[in-house]
Image 1 (cartoon, rainbow, N blue to C red):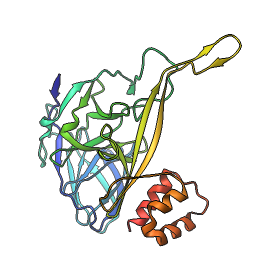
Image 2: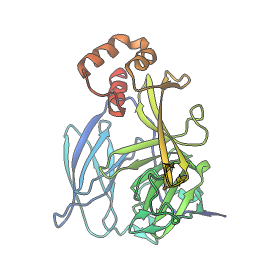
Image 3: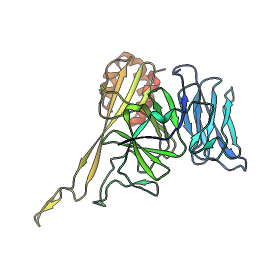
Image 4: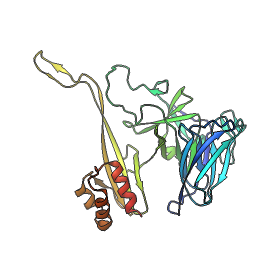
Length: 322
């Protein structure tokens, strides 16, 4: 049975992906000088947002003269406009009087009532996800993270949607986005009511997920590189392998534990074309990026003997998009 989620902040954002941008950083504190962890900072004119980390530190890629809105539970909202300054000290004041009945009365639109959910079958114990209750030795997880994480959603109306009381996780088996309301109720968001979502890991690194049906119609794929020429995606295919241990007293086979096994597949999309599967090998990269062989060879020469892993692939993609 579907239920509407309570109204959540929705920030209307326009798209301006490739304009000149700059990186700003800073610290979010309260009036007593205490750092404010997991404050939400959003560029209200572009689809860009982040959280401060556990020490109040934030980094955000913004456009020139961007208007930044800062939200944190228990504090008044704060806005500032970026200039040539690279570092900002944000001081949040007082109790957030805009919060009433779970709704945020801000300068942006509140329109998250259209999101619908299903009640989840998960347990929330001390912030951790209980994956199974029939076997303690289960290896791996069907969920992307071992605990609930901060994040936001891009709605079908192309708005950033966020709520300080909501935490998220992603079900790698079903391809569903899960929401934890105040560590009490777990819901599954109806996939038809949003376009994409962004989750933040424990290091407050952001991970964006989108639907690319040409790669997989069942799951969301992670955006590794999003540039004007090349886009690189990661598809995590997770399979459940049930315990199959057996022995005849002399020899034994199989495992005595259930296991979730991940397989990572990478794809590149060039100039809006069809996805092409990538392998983390030089030969595969040279074939996929043959049109930019000079830049590719220079990058590989500079990288030297570095392992070709996901970080290598991201740096390569960013380099080729310049």
